[in-house]
Image (cartoon, rainbow, N blue to C red; front, side, top):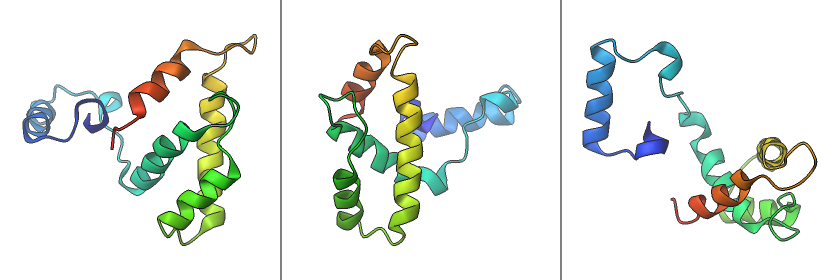
Length: 115
């Protein structure tokens, strides 16, 4: 919910009301991503600096600079997580014949300035 509608008081209260009334199914509950919020933030920022006119992977240099800027303690773990996220993103951003999927371009435009 928070990533779809924002974390404002009215949304949170409405969500908790639906939850307490038993109107939210288990599969519709918002996943607990508190541990991953920094990775999500990092990926959304890094995805704006893709190589190859925006359809290539995020460069090592961009990831390294981001990690340096935000004082990431375990760079190897950070690199691994961002690479995994990026690989999955690249999979869904291409169709079976290797052409760009419309989702990718819309995703990049919608993510800029989000945080």
